[in-house]
Image (cartoon, rainbow, N blue to C red; front, side, top):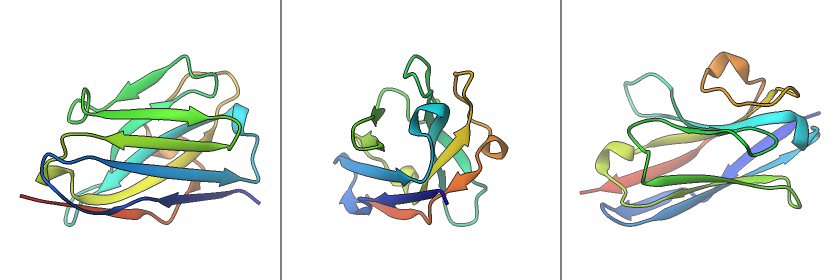
Length: 126
């Protein structure tokens, strides 16, 4: 069965950087779109970024564009999220997700993802 596991969360000060990693197993890594979502206390889950299996399509939410970078590592079947210039507003549980999409492209729709990790907490203090 498919598994998606996030790691790398922690407590940082505003303006600092943090990298998250997502390890996948039990799925065809090159037939899935991969994405990061996040959910802050009292708020709905929101998309952060996605990347297509062929790495040709990448999308970012406007709130993180220019600060966050998503990357895909085929050899290790992992996806990372580099977060720079962190703000207090970035505080949330971050989730990695994988969605079957062999045709390519990527999506920021949560309903398009079948496999979700347990989440990793990112806390940014001002």
